[in-house]
Image (cartoon, rainbow, N blue to C red; front, side, top):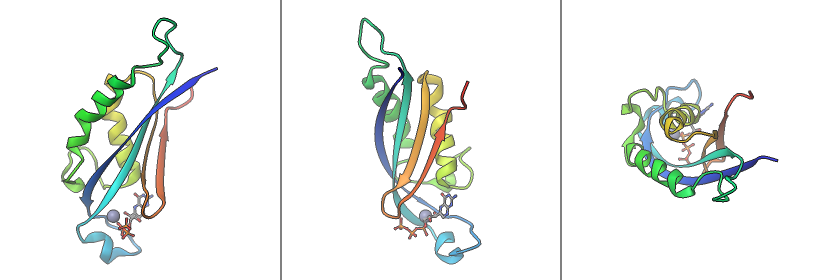
Amino acid sequence: MNYEISQKFFFDAAHTLKRKIEADSSRRIHGHTYNAEVTLSGQPDPHTGMVVDLGLVRQAVEQLRPRLDHHLLDDIKGLGPATLENLCAFIWRELAPGLPGLAVVRVWRESIGDSCTLRAAPR
Ligand SMILES: Nc1nc2c(c(=O)[nH]1)N=C([C@H](O)[C@H](O)COP(=O)(O)OP(=O)(O)OP(=O)(O)O)CN2
Ligand SMILES: [Zn+2]
């Protein structure tokens, strides 16, 4: 059996996006509320009963969140075009060093129903 333990957070951010369709509205600066969820997988430590203390996950997320919340995503170094895919990859790169067992990063926009899920490659 394997366990997955998750934490959700959100950030409000602005962006532009170059697209072939809906091009005009996408290239103007506009904002979204982005939801995100990070999931770690593993076995609970027999002494603590925890895969990972969710407080540690929260600390890592709280370090990252101010770098996204109320920012223009176009300005964030290393993000690239502000798509859900690139947000998943960015969050992964930023959190993975401090969160061993990181298995899934999901980012979605509730208002429009768009979602992206990034999973660790199977070993
Ligand atoms: N593969 C992807 N395709 C698209 C992405 C993406 O991140 N990955 N993103 C977009 C747009 O940003 C998205 O559709 C939102 O559209 P947008 O014009 O920015 O906002 P809306 O006004 O339509 O939605 P609200 O969130 O309600 O403001 C497109 N494709
Ligand atoms: Zn948008």
